[in-house]
Image 1 (tube, rainbow, N blue to C red):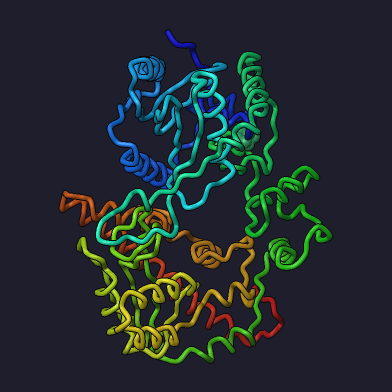
Image 2 (image 1 turned 60 degrees about the vertical axis):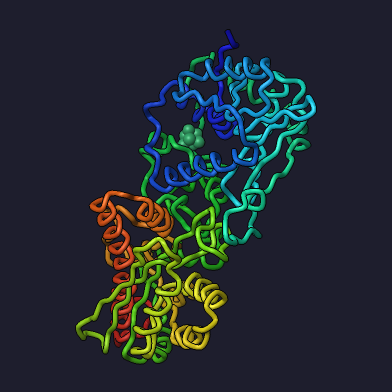
Length: 502
Ligand code: SF4
């Protein structure tokens, strides 16, 4: 029977981040926060990419335990397969120093073993290197003929041609040297985690910047439960490290931070918060509105960003617009005319999307968008694939007016923005209500995953529901832009020129 394990890769990484998080994970698992939908979606994507990468080394045996409590069986099965001469094993599991790891792909060549960990990202982060270092430490001590360990991730330069070429889609980078450099680190932290576990006392660790780095801790629902709202960690544009330093000095609430600690925009955020006063530069806003000539359209686009390119000519994670919501206004107060485009077929949406976008926008003078960056990047990419629309797309881009400029330049700032310039946060700050709260799709990331789900869903009723969720989210974004546009126009019209108003 194999050695019993106390640590897994997940619990080890928790112990490196925070001994309390490790202790809670091992002994009070039920206190763990629910997995946010975005994280769940990323996790599922990682799983699918892991399976695809197996095709790089076909013919392997999968020893995944199927259940988290059956890892001992996976360890035994791995040993048996190695002894029997199996040369490719998926999810091979090992235990050493009471630490269990599994590796996505283990391959034998010329009597030596090579380990491959698959990541569904374009870049190799330091956190991934640490994952691999732990795997190397455990596997090398269990299987001395381990020659190398590599991270297999997505190649950002790969372009899909007629069919998927997985040998070009993935790239492989050895991280053996980093792993060897970290052997002492692994030993030290494994011992520290064991001590925490066997001492059986909840480590006294205060909240701080470490709760967010390298991962947002999933025990914040427990540790942060009694932390006041409007704490310094809620300030956008301030690093968690900086917020942690303020906390160490005793500044927990935004109101506690003395002005001397602040500069630039952060000083303005905090001063506005302390006084609970909006900041308004009316002349600037009026100047902005001079450029708005009617009829105007409010536009929001949603993008599909599959990790594995789905359409010819696309790279991993490249933007493909599949949905837009469009509202035309002839003047403020006039009845709004709403339209949307949703591509409900398997084919590449781009041609249809562009055609409809061009048709609608021929009828407006200006197009109001919140943060044009993504839209312009997507349109530029569309034109590369559909050069016949170049002129029309240039016309659309010329009509764009970016409402976000008012906020990024701080011509308007609401104290409850707490430094954020996201549309969702600004709308909530200004109107005191989160209009996204009950939406099943309420972020761009979920919209991208939602479209993927929509394309794969065979049940027509579920498919319809997914479609409606996506359209509702997109329309909500357009409504938020329209609401803010009307609100700011009113604010700028106010005769009080003091710069602050209630
Ligand atoms: S929330 Fe912070 S202090 Fe609490 S367990 Fe997590 S990392 Fe540790």
